[in-house]
Length: 503
Image 1 (tube, rainbow, N blue to C red):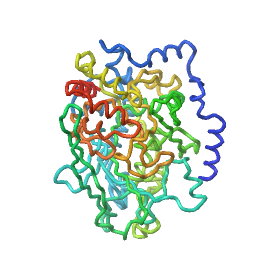
Image 2: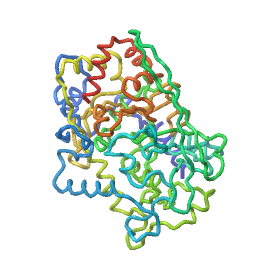
Image 3: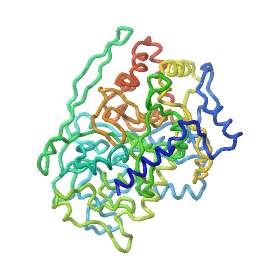
C-alpha cells in the first residue's frame, strides 16, 4: 500500500498538484472576493496604527474573555448553540482519564498497556503549551521522545521517500518512548535532559545565556535501543485555532513555498506532503512540529494511539505503540467492548474530540494600539520575521463548519518547513522534513503562555526559557532575522518582545 501511495504522490506532483507555485489561485472565490482577500492579507506598511480587525486574530470566532488560565479553553465565539453542546461533550472526552483493562468502568478502559499520559488534557494542559520537567521533577507528561531508525529495505525506502509522515520505529521500542505502563508491565524507559549554558553577547554588549540540551534514555525496560536510533524531543503544542488553520486553502500556503529560493531572499519554505489515513489521499501536512499530519482528525487518532495506547476507528491499535518484540505488552487485555463499538474509543468519541480541537477559539489581542507594540511590530517586519511567520490568511468559503468560513485570521505562520540550522536540529527526518527542518509554529496566543501554562518555555523541546532565547536559537533560513534581533538596541528588542506579548 505504501509503495502504491508513493506512486500516487509522484504522479500528482508531476501533474501539477503544486499549482499555486504556477500562479493558480483559489477556486472557492469569485473575482471580487479574491480581490478582497488579496487586499486583506497584504503585508502591513503603516505601523503608526493597528490594522483593521487586528485585535480579532480568529475573525468572528475570536474569544472575548479577560486573560486568565482558561484563555485557551473557550469555544469559537461564532458557534451555534447546537455546536456548543458538541464542543462541551468533546471537552469532557478530552479531559477524560482512561484506565487499564479490565475495569468496571468499561467505557473508560483500554489505557496503554504502554503510554505517556492518561488523558489528552494531561499533555495539553489547559489546552496550552507543554514543557520539559520543572526543577525537581523526574518526568513530564507534556513532553516525550520520538524514536525512529533509518529505513532499510529498498521497498521500505521507496515508501518513505519524501511521501508520508510515518517513520520506521525502533525494532523494540517503536516510534515513541513510553515512560508509563499499566500494572504488571514495565515502562520502556525514562528521558534524561542535561543542559549546558552557552553565553551569547548581543550587539549592545549585553549578554544572554542559552541552554544547550543533551538527551539520553535510562532505565530501559526491554534491552538496548537500536544502534542507529534517532531521538527527537517534543513538547505538546497549543490547541488554539486549529480548526481555522485546517481551513486555510492549500493554494495559499503553497503560494508561499519557494523550495529553491528563486526570489533570492534566503527563505525557502517547503511543503511536507503526507497521506491522509482516512481517505488514503495525498494531502498537505500542516499539523505537528514537522507538519507531519494533514488533518486534526488524523492528529487526534495518532495521539490516542501513541500517547494513550487507545484504539480509534482511524488507528485501530488497541496495544498502542507496542511492538512484536514486546510480547508481554501484546499479551495484555484491551479495552475493546463489542457492545460499545469495535475500538476502545469508538465513534462518536474520536468525532467529538476532533470537533473540540477544531472549535477551540483564539483570545483577542491586547494593546494593539500601544505605541511600544506598534514599534515592535515594525521591528518584527524590518528584521524579516514576517517572511516565515506570515501574519494573516483568509479561510475557505467552502469550509464545512460555518464558523470557519471566510474568516480573516492572524496565525503568524506560513505552515511550511524551514531549515532552522544545526543549533535546533534533531537530525531525525520525518516525511519530507529533514533533520534540520521545522514547521513555522503559529504565534497567536504566544503572549499568554505564562498566564495559561504557568511557564515561558518555547521551541520544540522547551529549551528556550523566554522569547529572547527562542529567537536567539534561530539559525539556517532564520539566521538573518536572528542576527537582526541580536543587533538591535535594548529598547528596540523590548519593543519587539512587547509586540509578541500582545499576540
